[in-house]
Image (cartoon, rainbow, N blue to C red; front, side, top):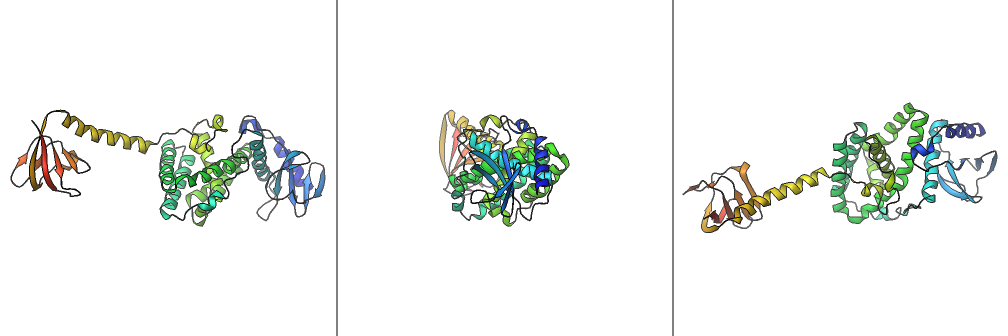
Length: 334
């Protein structure tokens, strides 16, 4: 174990911490094996404070802790990346960071079992993986747009998920950046097998909201980095970082334009003098590519055909409420 500790220490010495995040610097670390904590130059009993994979105060200083499990392979570079993850939690503690303790854990237990929301979440995950793999900004914009829809379904309960993405996902991002410096090959393999596979094939893991946020957070920040989006300056924003990031919601933008154009057609027509004529009839012939409906009114750009007449001019149909074809009156220009 002492050899593994020293090997990890040597790998950590190769990492440019400031390149991962401005101002980020290493702190002391411990590797725990069984009941023994291995620190710099000594071993101590694990005790009540030295457990888990986290950062704790020990002897008056922050200490990054990694407890070995059966999942650990003994690879010093991968272990160094995992310890950088925990060191980053220490960095979060020292900054003006609004979610130092990841207090969103219990809030996530209130997540509703909403199938539609989970379907959207699975689609989000696939878009995010695509955005990272292909450096695709359109996929990232679609990811945020879909996420907005899920937010509208779940309400602010979803903010706990976003907060955990920042708290744990950002630390995972830091650890991955460290591994990328040490071994680009191991980085690519680790990202693919640990995170991308989860996002591209979300089965029961989709419902483990906290666990899933490690991957969505890490891949989100990696994707932003690849796409050249600067997110470092909003690290201390009061909102979760994934909410504070400014990215275009292309669907919402197009939707707003669509609604405005449709409304303008009615407004422009009604801006001139008009007359309303009663017409209790169903229309028969029509041009579906040049008709727009708002409520129970239909604007017809090139006219409309009834059994007894064909109107070959722009007009508005006042429809029977909820009816597809039953007209009660027509509005023509004078």
